[in-house]
Amino acid sequence: MKKNILTIVIMAATLINLILSVVLVFSVMPAMNKTGNLIDKVASVIDLEIETKEDEGQEYTIEDLVPYTITYESSAKINLLKEGEKAHYALLDGIVISFNPKAEDYNSIYESVQNASVYIEDIVKETIGSYTYSNINQAQIKTEAIKKIQEKYNTKCIVDISLTGFLTA
Image (cartoon, rainbow, N blue to C red; front, side, top):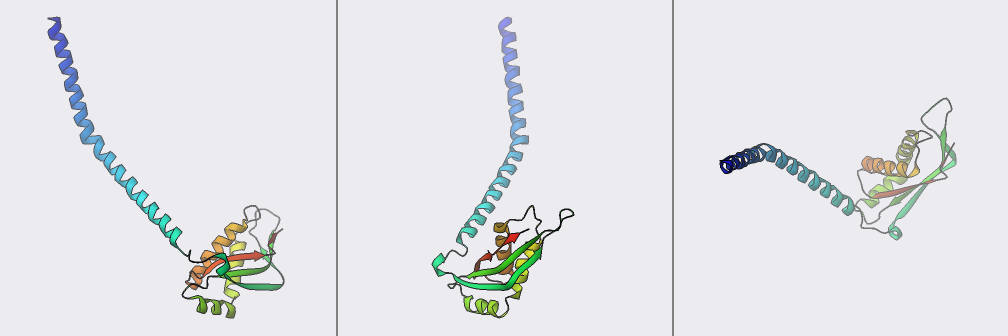
C-alpha cells in the first residue's frame, strides 16, 4: 500500500511539473522572444550608427587640412547665460576653421566662408552664449559649433574649428 501511495505522489508531482512546463512554454516564452527580438533590433541600429560614424569624413590627414583664420581687432566679448546675480562672459580673439580640400564641395564652401564669414562667427558666438560659466566646455563648444556650421552650409568640408584666445570670466 505504501508503494502505491508513493507512486501516486510521484505521478502527481510529474503531472504538476508537466502542467507548469506547458504554462511556462506558452505564456513566458513568447514574451521572452519578443524581448529578444527587440534587443536584436536595438543592437543592429547601434551597429549601424557606429559604422556610419567611423566611415564619415575620414579621407584626410592633419597635413591635408587648409586653415582659414577669422580674427577680431579687439577681443570679442560674449555674454554667457546668467546663473546667479553675477554676469559672466567669454573673450574670443578669433576662430580658425579647418577645411578638407579633398571634399567635393571644397572650392565653393571655402569661397563662401571667405566672402561671408559672419555666419560662422554668429554660430560660434551663439554656441558660446548658450552656456553658463559653471558648465562651459571648450571641446563641447567646438563639437556643437562644427555640427551647426556643417548643417548651415550643408557640407562635411568643414571638419574642425579652433577658438584662439578663448577665456572666460
